[in-house]
Length: 118
Length: 107
Figure (cartoon, rainbow over the protein chains, first blue to last red):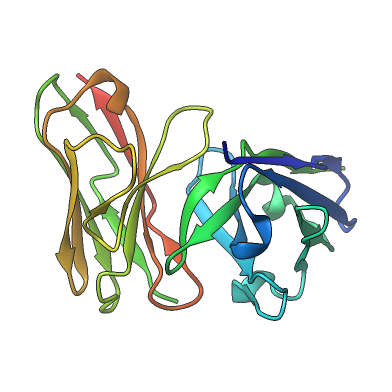
């Protein structure tokens, strides 16, 4: 069974950094692109970015490229999202997802809440 | 960025009714479109990809169609478990973008 479990969320002060993790199991992690999507409270979905199998290609949404960094550790079957200079606009549920075919997300984690507030 | 405009923003359907949700792209996305369903408090689930391909395990009452800039998701017979939010997503050009969502309720 494919499972994606995010962790590392919580309350963080504006301007600070936070690193999210996504532990993958039930599939061959190093065979897939992986991505991050977020959803502000009561709002729609926003694609953050995605990373290929050997980390040689990482694509980001332009507005977040200078704040967020996606990485992965294939030995640990884990995907990461390093977030810096956080602002209230970054308050959201953050999902990791497996990417298939051409940019589709076939499995999603349960999501982790990040709240940016003083 | 490619803008994805969904309509309607919300709708209410009776049991057994046919439901159609539309998604309009700001430019031709050559059928690189997916539909997701999100139930309250849950993660999104992939329903349709490449505009009309049904994901494994998705009931056959769901179908997708369209081309160019106009796409639609149809539910042929509304069921209680179909309540939730629906989102379209283009994967033709980076950054991938989602529609604003459609909230579907059972009347």
